[in-house]
Length: 433
Image 1 (cartoon, rainbow, N blue to C red):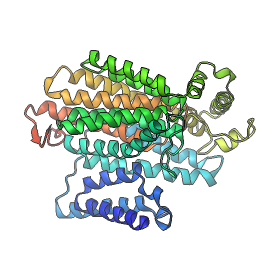
Image 2 (cartoon, helix red, strand yellow):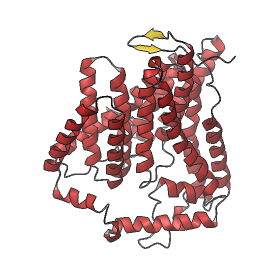
Image 3 (cartoon, rainbow, N blue to C red):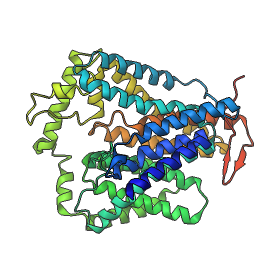
Image 4 (cartoon, rainbow, N blue to C red):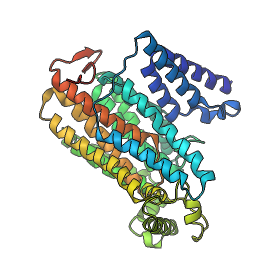
């Protein structure tokens, strides 16, 4: 019965993709974050659902283009598009020269599978309404898993660690916690855009459960990311005086519920010199950095940790840091491109929010920019402690930032944007002149 249910989910997503290509982009997001195949016990667990759906979206694009009904438009040129292309080409080069081609090439194709749908997002998500629905789809998929984790955390008194769905990129408690923290700003973006009171209360509850799930992951890196994210959201709040009492009450309640062992583990953030796990990571980071300095142009290729850390105490260890992972596997040039994408987008969103705040019709741009920025900052902090260099959500948020910049220009040109439902949206990107 479970296998049939998952198959029917795939059929429904394929039908939606064939009906409207841009809905197919949201369907791909559902498979990426909800991961229904991870709950399968039989054949559907290994069935290439994502590939089938991606092919369906491409067929839908070609059919609608042939009929002349495809809503297709490239966004204006953006420097991040060229950096993304350059980074992918660099991945291809380092894979060709990898220390272990047997492991590197499959990983290269996995990363390419992450980057390929971004092209569909760029050309098919060309209105504020579509961008909103895509962000909401991602936030809702992550939230469905998060609610279960937050509920479990409350029921167990935070004494048990919360994990993500099995056989996914975010199953590990540390990975899952970073994803949950990144999703909180997306949920807040959704809350600020909706006018339905009941939905707003539901979203507030989901955000609270998300914080519970992140805390109950027992992840020290996620705790740091959560703290900085909450601070950013507080700074961006228009009613700071209302947020402070809520945070104070939350801290008091958490202090009474969290077990003593949790506090002992978090205390090791300051006393990492005496903690075995932290020392192991420091050794791996040192090995990765030294290898990158010795091979600054090409690095070691995907999965180079299998050889670089082979002599470490405790055997072969993963990088445990996205920064070290990128640096050691692809060299300093690729590391510079990747950092430019991440931190350049954070800076660009801050600049976009500052400019939009000076124009009342662009209030929605301020909301989108600050929330996407907070999500990227959460990633930037969490990525220091876990190897999440090639996560879908990082590159999707970067693409969302590109689309937001283009849409904000369109909204600035159209002083009276069209209204769809509860949203006031510009129709498309500004047309080239």
